[in-house]
Length: 586
Image (tube, rainbow, N blue to C red; front, side):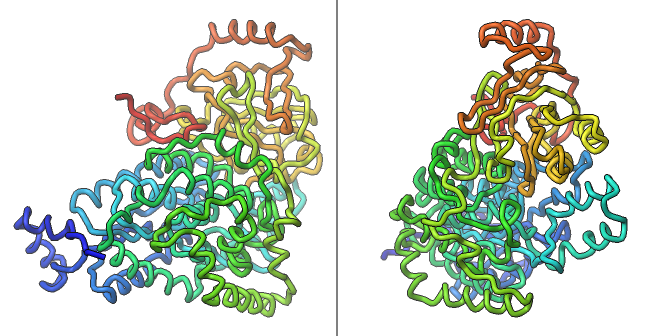
């Protein structure tokens, strides 16, 4: 194959300052003429998911050098949703995704590179990097930062919400709560459950942008370091090849594969924000309706928390993304291209021949020996014909309460709440709502609303503590629903419905709900409607007139943020069902 001219060498001819400035940065004269590789990461001391990424950066840089290139390190440290949970800090979370993508665009385009390695682990860092690499569109390899180990008693971080709620209700003492706090994060890596971080690492591989079998390894595994090194080598190889940029590789069929994998793993509902936003950067339209269509009839196979039994470290031991794809191979587009230069189908066949699954089994054997367990691969990833469920894991609900849609993770919802008639209890902030839930000011049969928490309202924070307070309550967990225009943690379980669109701040029907309205929820029929007032049912026509009268007197709440990043985000964020990316009018 004829090698293409490297863009970095053309830039040296245009800019005479480039060589001396790079020499002053520590490059050698020999480095200047090599393929120049952009190594981007979210490394920083912000949280366990990013604190170890410097080791992967170093390994990727070594791989670049071994293949004859030179790696330049850039950083866009991400924030931690867990650390800011329950405070106004969480309002910055979704907006940070846009800022990470913006900085990657700026860094890589200000001084063009020949290829890139993108290293991230967590909730906004991974989708921000995927959005950024799509904008930059240089040959790119993604390295995922892996997952942390589980603690004693298989403790994982998402259980902290349950422990906290139990402590608030007096069901456990402070020493037990402190034990949970001190043992839930025993190592670096993303939180050890299929939350947003783990989901998005898996999505990166499902899109064909990582080396096969590399997503969501245990973060302390030596295999992960070797994958990072090989990613550096592969980036140099890609820099010399034509038609291997991200937009050459990733297609609508790639996104459909990713969504089918999302269904099989019971992935985070936050993927319904991130996948459409990433697709938008590729010039592809994905909406909540796409998810709903592909999840219908999809086989749900992964027995990993929060919907399942095991910590996320066991995902890799069972064969990871390739094992999931092998089980659902009959519904995948196997001819899509990947960053290996081979199709997905070719990658899967090669993994079966090169000992990948044998290595995974060795790790599972070691884990069983260390923990005194006897867990089998089939316990973690169920065979296709023995699926945990056969209707995917999420549903998009629509109706006069959510004309554009709302999302529920039905695999984590009690069956009792799949079809319910409830009475509205609206709150205009999470603080008001969680107090009512914890002190049983809400009753069985209530539909608890938290509104003005969408992208335009407050940045779209997670309603994690309220959802955990509900799902861990023996009475309320199976008798009430939580409905919000905000979002949920990937760890959330229970009868929780999020992303209600249009949001309250934009004048959506959720803003018009009043105390005592009758709410009808039907997951099977994908419906979410206001069907009555003050306990009295109305016809759809009567309800439409009532909502229209309420709309005439509705006034938007004053802006919560009057300056800075969240003001920008509030002014330009698209609907949650479109991905809440920054949307500008032409």
